[in-house]
Length: 256
Image (cartoon, rainbow, N blue to C red; front, side, top):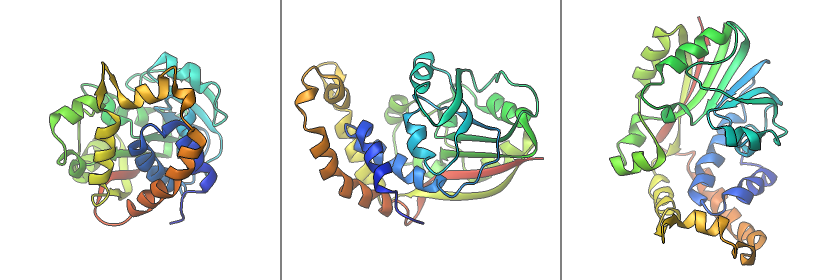
């Protein structure tokens, strides 16, 4: 699988430089998504502010609809050229008619759905056309075993399913698992976690990444130079994360 193109890497670092752990994981995901061919109309569940979609789906045509639960994110996502339309919506109660979409995609979102994501999976099945595809990435139980409850609370991870559990859940909701791939190597995870811990150090009530990004003195940081220095290191870790035992799952399912 090819490297992440340098312009995409630089774009990723332009907003994730205070959180290099995010850049490593999202860069790996962008590579994993790069070979996926989607059929319009396409719905993205969890589009966030839109800027991550520009990176994650860099090799994908413009997406028809993006949704997120947070209105502020949607306000920002309206400036993204990756989506034809964005709107605030709950994945557990989608505002679309039955059999609306040929493809539903979701990157690192379903683990964040509070209480239960089963209603959201049912909704995906409902709005997909027959033989429509559902692609999603989620942390597996391998990833969950590496961290304590404190980490899960910090990042709002509510569940870690095994591949077998995912296959069962999808099947019970009208979806058949077609393929899967583990990604984000356990070999890179310790480095990733150290970087995560550094960026989330609490400094006078705010985490370091927030201090760096939002401080009134942030204009003094030579961001372009910093990004140039970070790029080869982050690129190397992104590439390393594609080898060895993976801790995240990329799933492809089809509507029965």
